[in-house]
Amino acid sequence: MIPPPSDCRLIVFDWDGTLMDSISTICGCLSHAFAYAGLADRGVQQYREIIGLGLEDALAALAPDADQPTRERILAGYRECFFGTPVGQMPLFPGVEDALVQLAGAGYEIAVATGKTRRGLDRVLGEHPLLAACISASRCADESRSKPDPLMLRELLRHYDLPPAAAIMVGDTVHDMEMAVAAGVLPVGVLCGVHGAERLDASGAAMCFADPTALPGWLIR
Image (cartoon, rainbow, N blue to C red):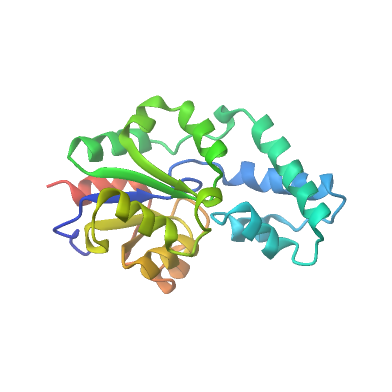
């Protein structure tokens, strides 16, 4: 295990598959969306591959030949399913809330960089007020650029007036790791979501943990 950066002040988390156990719900909503648009199901494996991207970029990968009306129908079907699914069916991973409370209490700034829309992130944060209180800034794909573009991380660094060396990015996908590498931020993988250690390592992860609950033990001295 490598030692934590001595000047780390900011921890940026991905959301789906990193803090929240929402992968199966997202895949189910994508399946619903393609059926809603009258298109063939792409299958769970293809859906898992685009988790972490913004919806527009996800559709570009899943339905590259779809015209705009069809894309709009897929999006409408996805939103219908996702916002109709109770947040209780997408629990936080066990211990995540306590881990972020510990990190915030130790003086770390906590932020989120996610492929979710602002509406989607605000909805789930509203159901977890203790966790929301730990998060001092966030960026969503519909108000920035989709991963792996580094813009979300660069905007967060500007928000806190910090250099890249003062931050780490924690996520479960290659999109998170590639974004961190492009921004010059230390990439840290977690294995509770979509991609395994081999793929995370190949995309630049400095190290991988089973889940975010390991971070306080690594960072707090």
